[in-house]
Length: 176
Image 1 (cartoon, rainbow, N blue to C red):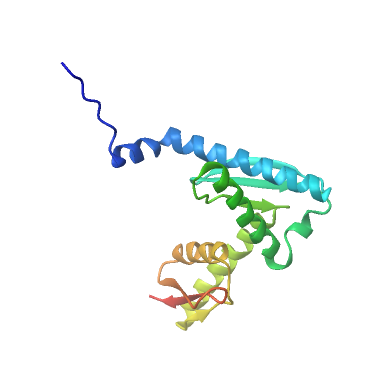
Image 2: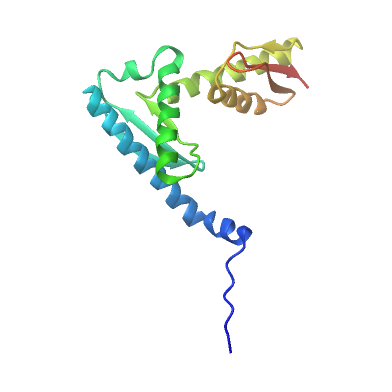
């Protein structure tokens, strides 16, 4: 009597790979790879900084804090930070074989920016609600637009959309 061994289907393999414990393990691995990559970068630059790894909202989050020179790694309006985040994502992808949605914060810049943008989104939404006139905000990164959209969504009677092409994509707030 012969025995037939079936390989798991692609759907079964994908579903088992995306179970909560596997997803969490992958995110922890992403954070570890990113932390090692960024630690080597800081060593090369001779910058001091403490690297903190976490998992929030289904993505690995890496924060670097504590060094005097870290502001240089943020750049004007976070441009250097955005570039470092993409390089770190590529390093993680090269190591894991999976596209990363890792979020990088340096010197608390993203956390501070999130607060500013939440306030901007809320006050813009309230202004549009009161005046009835749509408002276009200046061009923003995807990170910034997401925060604005979330803040606008929390105000009843208004909604937001993005328009334009990168790097000039902006949020428009409308009365519903």
